[in-house]
Image 1 (tube, rainbow, N blue to C red):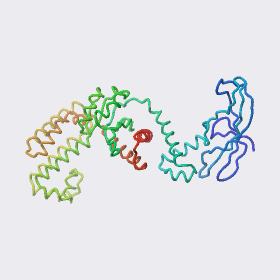
Image 2: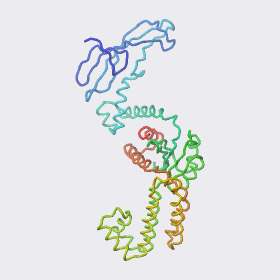
Image 3: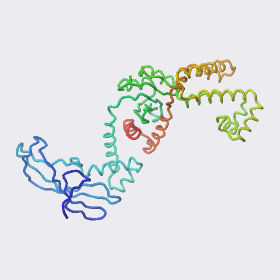
Image 4: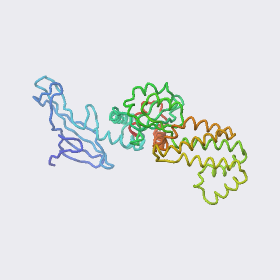
Length: 391
């Protein structure tokens, strides 16, 4: 068979023969440039030839091996004996980088270590070690990143022993920037002090968390804080349900009515709206409370407003806060205090449309990563996977 280049390994390889079906045996020889690793001299003398059996990537479902002929050299300049470094094959490895990458990509795409062990005839510890090396190599590509101009900050549960992890999400490029252990000021302070480009951040989206607001004000001095619209409307709904329970505990326990009341009025079918109207007509106080909830939610759902257009909306919000404070219901009074405390951040929602829906979506993906590992105990391993798979 004529000699041909093995393009799927790298430059400098010649094929002598290809035989077999499963596995495919490729007999090849390295004939590329060689220099002494110590003195870089090319005054070399061939001392010996050896044959190495190296696992290569599969062709479809057929496994492949390379019987590689490698020469042993003697450097006449520094008197050292060595074997050449070859592209695509790391020193002391019995598999090509293409095969290692194939294993890593299969494991990343959801194939379990046990299944890869059966398919490729390698140990599960080897799969884990290769995959970890692959993640570390990918993670180095993100090590020099600076903070995005638009960040989303939210927490998710990690483990019973270590508690919660705070996710810093790049809302501009839709990727996870960095997960950090903890959710309090003391736990996040060492991480935030070493964060590059904190002064570049212009907008930070958070839920109604006072601790996160204090952290943003301290470590992101140039950032505008924007409340997450989902959490604001959920807070309004929770306090409305609490006020409904104070007025009519029996009706509040009706799961059918609860389902209708929690929806927006424009999303109800005609028969559902008729049933809800019958209940509200029989309870005027709850009807007034329901209309207040709908009007307040419509106000909070307004988007894409300029600074000038937001001025009348702010006045409407302050008017609602005043009405809720003097409504006579403890739940509404608590809601008024919450809205007043977060009025500046809520007003920013009308100008900035970014929200933490992107962050919550990544949290779902992180839960899948955790379930695949039956729960992580080592945060460093978990962080590595999150940055590579979600970043």
